[in-house]
Amino acid sequence: MADPADAGFRIRRAAEGDLEAMNRIYNWEVEHGVATWELDPWPLERRVEWFRARDHDEPVLVVESAGAVIGFGYLTKYRGRRGYRFTRENTVFIEPGYQRRGLGRALLAALIAEARTLGLHALVAWIDAENAGSIELHRALGYELIGVERETGHKFEQWRSSVEMQLLF
Ligand SMILES: CC(C)(COP(=O)(O)OP(=O)(O)OC[C@H]1O[C@@H](n2cnc3c(N)ncnc32)[C@H](O)[C@@H]1OP(=O)(O)O)[C@@H](O)C(=O)NCCC(=O)NCCS
Image 1 (cartoon, rainbow, N blue to C red):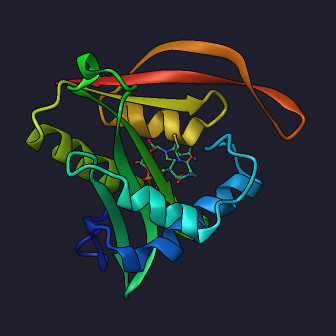
Image 2 (tube, helix red, strand yellow; image 1 turned 180 degrees about the vertical axis):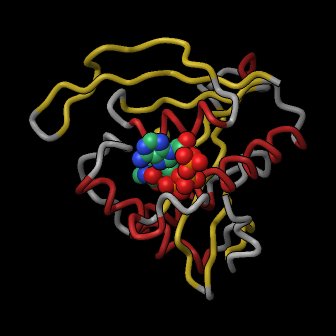
């Protein structure tokens, strides 16, 4: 696998100027994919509010190539209660035309590095049970499959199940 840096990609913290591209990548998945069970595209204003509401210990990273954002990922506090403070849920999106080039792996590895820096204990990912690419990506980076939550989702006229995957530090 090529190192993204050698291939002209870089991973860095997101800034407000990235939000439009991030939201476009997300909305593509809303309309065409099952990585998110959101059914309605987000208006840009919602993405801006989402970004501004994040705490310093909920990092957002982007993958950039030739000045364009082609992927993003982030760590989100897990559930609301303080007892979960050493856990984050991670999310990654790579633009369809740039998948299978090692970028998702590099992005998730960067999020894991952020989690270590923050002194976290656990990362969890909830993944559509048919999203083999994401399940394999997480497995490749050491996550274990914890279990299946059956048919709590409904998208594209089908019941959908999710798997929980977890990485402990
Ligand atoms: C899932 C996703 C993030 C993977 O990113 P990517 O850049 O395409 O993946 P990479 O090229 O870094 O692949 C890393 C490893 O993941 C696994 N993998 C990735 N895509 C795969 C696929 N379609 N099928 C099987 N394994 C896959 C492989 O183990 C791969 O290693 P390899 O290329 O050496 O075989 C990307 O496909 C994506 O953004 N999909 C749409 C959104 C999404 O599903 N996000 C995850 C939400 S939980």
